[in-house]
Amino acid sequence: MRKVLRVLLSVLSGELLAQGANGHGWWLTVLGLAMFLGLLQHQERALRVLSSAVVTTVWFGLHVSWIKTVGVDAWLLLVLLCALPWLLLVLFRWPRRGWAQYVITASGVVLVEWLHDNVPWGGFPWGNLAYSQVDGPLVGLSLWGGQALVAVAVTCAAVACVQLVKQRKLLRGMFIVGSLMLCSHYAFPMSIHDGYRSLDTAVIQGGPDRTAQAQQQPWAVFNRHINQTRILDSAVRAGQFTRPSLIVWPENSTDVDPLNNVAAYKRIDDLVNRIQVPILIGGVTWQGNPYGPRNAGILWMPHTGPKQIYAKKHLVPFGEYIPLRGFLAGHVGRLNQIPEDFVPGNRPGLFDLNDMKFGDLICFEIAYEDHLTALVNGGAQFITLQTNNATYFGTQQSKQQFAIARFRAIEHRRSVVMASTTGISGLIGWDGNVIVSTKQGESTFRSTEIQMVNGRTFTDRHPHWVFWTSVMILVLFGWRQFRKKSRVTRIKLWLNR
Image 1 (cartoon, rainbow, N blue to C red):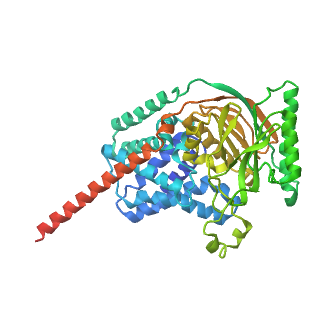
Image 2: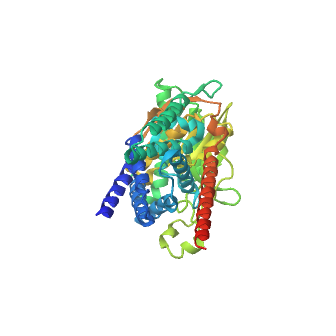
Image 3: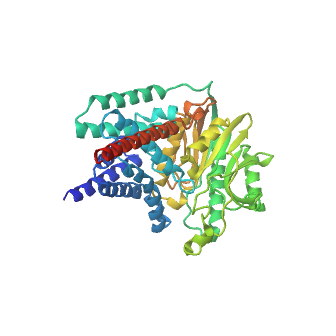
């Protein structure tokens, strides 16, 4: 009976964590994690493993359910990869009381999320605790320590709940959580800039086209973005909008190679020269050394054409390349649908636009913290995000990605211009507030003013201090436990002589 109750509580914990990750309330993540940590305090390791397996399977199974549009096997593999790092919390006995429970548990969660974000094949940082806090009272801590420090704060709040329920300890938890909230509150309006400059920017969302045949789809998507850009230009000429300084198209807004296809090149070039506004194109192009397909952001300038190109650095395994292709392709026939591996870029997506500089990210790269840090430290004054959510149309994937973009805007104090083929697109202020946005499935555009920032946050200057502090704390804790166990062993041997 107790085992059944434990399973039911584990399911509830996973459900709360998934609902919090999907933006239904920052506090749901705290409660879900508190239940998870409480379940992991059982003496028997087998029961701790059971609880961890159920919680993380429900959590990530719901959170990344959108990947089922690719295949159930892809969903099961992704859930497994997301859940495995959390078994680290099962393998060791963590402190159950006092200040040590806060410090050691939070450090363990930071290490777990680092593994989740980086292993294997570059990791998949979807469902991180910090992303659920974008509208909560702890998000301001991201300015001081990025997503890791927010995860520490969420864990401390969860531990406070565990101590309140199991030990009736209230004051310590109130002090720790209250202090973290106070630091977050005063960090949030922190001034890190040397003055703002405004920039009128537009995003184009071509929208889905379900009438085109498969072989016609690349041209159909391309035409929809051309048409929406023309509509924007007509609205500007009619005085309804200010002429933007930059127009952003989504990832794969042209799957017709815009650099090698003469017709596509001419249509883009004619459009840019007509409206006299640079367009950041998202397209697949075959070029470079080594020669191969690249998922690229291409800045197309009036009169001079495509002079600056960013090739996506962080490719998606099993989406843009096949890891261990020689072995896996022979056993999984569906992988042959990706006959060519994309070629990754080798530099950050920094673009010069007149006397300004901005940074470009493509699709899932927004979830990888180091990419944003490199762009900001390279001088980017605002961020563009080109993404293609057409495969996951009608799911929570686009909403989750938009929330991550909002978190990154707060963390780095940079406006984010997000363009999606099917939505959600939008322009996000440097404080994480949504200035304008679209709905999924619309064929539309949005144009408004954003602010550019030159300064850097503490997180930008010292991006990994929380992680390395957590590692040192865990090493010291492990060494102390080892010494304690060795001393007990020596005493037992001496008594048995």
